[in-house]
Length: 471
Image (tube, rainbow, N blue to C red; front, top):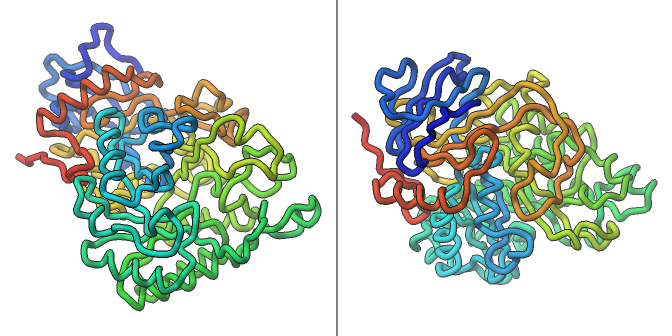
């Protein structure tokens, strides 16, 4: 991709994207003006626009991540809202849902409003906070779900991710409560009693290398319980980071029964297997753990056939000392925003299981729908909000530290050859990344302020309900 030599200041820029491949396979020009996709197809009025050569690039709706750990407030040594959304921009994301396991926990209106405000000020992506289900993630009593829903952050998804809501009565009450405002309970499915001291997937390999095993049934039993609870109360359950073939079958059964359940899979569970744990490299330590090749195959098939609804990164940054240590002491988690699209390309597109329209569905449209965002996950069409990503699917290269722009580097893909790269991200019509380079913070913040003044922003305060008007 090339940008014309005389690039105007991005906050006031109009962009003429030339020759992009749409997810339908057609090639078209795209004109972005004042935060809106002004024209698609043959552009007739590009006066004053910055030309972006998109020959060979795929144009996708801006990606949406339903599961991101931004760490702020409290764990800024790992990530901040600013650095995390810069990583999102590098990966092609224009909206991220920020998990609640911060310090203080995002279990009150004040904390979720703070996180939303930090995202709006940074401007790299919409930051939609996820509220905690229980106070302090302690699993003892419900957090202020209604207050968070009515706050300026307009929270609609609630999760104790990192911990399971293991009490069935509390889970039932949470599912009942959020029905009043069409909310979603996103469950980290892990029976705590079945995973005491667990370090990796339970199986022959865990016995061979002497690690305490993490059985698939610890995930599957919670999902089975919760889909029945969701059916009983008629509420929406979302399953975080589903990881086993057994879990796939339970979700498939629940959907066939008409239960309101959706599920996500992470990029790393689509590509990596438990054999990597034998290296004792803590980069591969994650919750839930990497599973068997048979599980990976089942997850891919389920994503392709719609049993699994979406891909979510579970981007989990950690400081160096939390990962460069012995396995037992290492923290669980991997960064994933910058690599997600390439990993999905490798696992699903290169294998023939999905096309680019399917990628747009699982990485943009469906997570936006599950998260109740109306200004994201929209098609690339005239009068739609100008949130889009340009991806170069050609070539393969080693994923290295230069690709990581967030604050932490605990990626499992360092040194691994992956296909493609994101070369441009446009949020509300302004670039957060161009030519593979994330734009400066001051420039993006200024563009975000101008977009808000124009009434084109999708700040968390209005939950993404854009103010665009159709002609």
